Image (cartoon, rainbow, N blue to C red; front, side, top):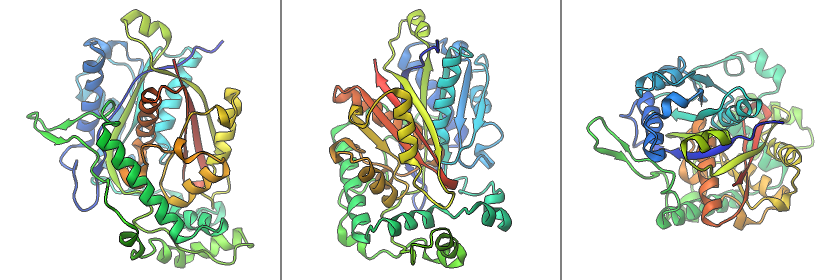
Length: 403
C-alpha cells in the first residue's frame, strides 16, 4: 500500500513586482529561498528540523543565472542546513513548483523519503524569462515540427476558438483584483505569508504588491493587445494552419488581463504520518491525487484533461470539490476552464489569482497551494483542486484533502 503524503505546513513570500518597481530585487534568490526554509524551523518549533529532511525539491521556470546551478542544494547550505539531505532543481515551465510538490509526495508514497520540503522560486526581476533559451525558443525547425507557439498567442487562440470577447477578459481581470484586494484586506493571506527582511532584519516586503483594488473597466479598455506583433511574426499562421476552422486569431490579451511578472518563493513541508507523531506536529492535509495531461502544443487548454484525470485517480466527481484554484496566466484559459467544468464562481479562485497577484513562474504552484489550504481551513471545507496550464500543451492538476 502507498504511504500517504501529508502536508504539515505551507508558506510563501509576498509576491513582489518585477517590472517597474522591483520590490524584492535587492534579495538574491538564494537568500529568498533560505529565509523561507528557516521559517519552517520557527513555525514548527523544531530547531533540529534540517536533520530530518530527506530532500529539498525546488521548481524554477528559468533555471539560469542567480537561480541556476541547483539552487536547491545551494540554499540548504546557505541556510545553515548542511545536515539536510539532497537538493534537487526541476523545470516543467510554470508548473515547476507544483510538480516539485507532487514529486515529493510521490517519493513519500513510494517509501523513498519520509520528510521532504518542496516548492518553487522565481525572481523575474533578476532572471528574465527565456534567459536559458532552448530549442523551442531558438531552433525554428523544432518550433515548426512541434507546433509550439508562445503562450500569449496560444491564449489569444483560446479566446478566438471559444468566442470570448475583450470585455469578457477585462471583466474577469477586474474580478480577480477585487477578490485579491478583499482577501488581503480581510487578512486571508496572513497565515501563509512570511515577511522578507534584509541582513539587518529590516522589512523589505510583507504584502503582495501587485494588487490594484481600484482598477476599473476604463483603466483596461485603452490597453493595446500584448501579443499581436508576436502573432504577425508567423505564430498566427501556425495556429490557423493547425486549426483551420478558426478564420483568424483575435489578439485580446493585454497587460491588464494577463498575469504580471513577479518575484517570490513558496514551499510546502511534507511527510508521512510517523514524522508528525515522532515530532508532535499535526498534518493539515494530504495529497490525494496528482495528474498530468498534454494537448496539442499549439494550445493552452490542457487543464480540463488534467483535472479529469486527477478526479478519476481520487475516485471523485466535480461536485466533491469544495474549492478550485486555477492559474491565471491569461484570462481566456481561466474563463474556459471555469465554464467547461461548470464551476460555481463562488468556489473558483476565491482569493483572486495571478492576474491580480502576479505570477512568479516557478513558485506559482506552491503559492496556489498556500491559498487553497488556508481557505479550506478558513471555510472549514475538505477537498480542493488546483490546476495549472503550461506551455507546449502541458497541464498539471493536484487534489488535496484536509485531515
